[in-house]
Image 1: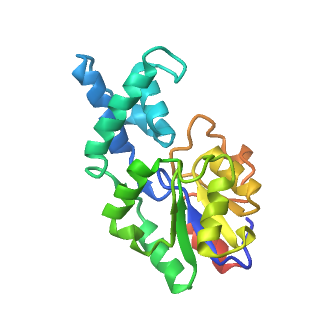
Image 2 (image 1 turned 180 degrees about the vertical axis):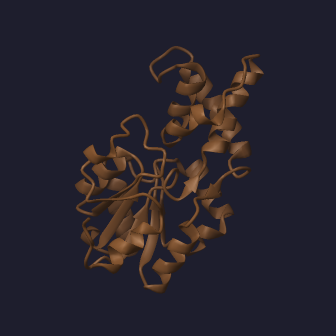
Length: 223
């Protein structure tokens, strides 16, 4: 497994990498089903697609895609539901708090680059003490292009005052790895996350894989 030398900062995807937001995302979508007299679905149906946000949740709940009639109305309803409940059941994955503390002890900066829009990213991270020490939080609409475009990662590196090559990016979706590689960063795939539809992580091209948050430290300590 590759180790990373000369790293000065670690950037993370948010949903499925640092936090488990699937319970709140799934609840927002499932409320739409029950409001229409449809039976609820178990969380296990929603969890794999939680990283895809509204698109993933509406796809699971109603089998609709963004190009389908009625999708936009459902999307707005989902977003309103999620805004009301997004901090009720969301928590950091086991080991994340300890990982962040260890990064700070090693005097490594850290931050977040997510495709979740600022409407949700900023209140959610603001409500969780974990993110008080994050030096950059870049959302899906902070720059003109979300991931897999590298623009959000370049923006995070700019905010940190670092060359992108001095940053490591960790994510649980193929688009995270595509964006990280395009930005010239070291990339780590978090296999404990949601993974999305293309869950053959070995084919993403990441420099390294981790199966739990704490394993990231081994990659840095070996460098």
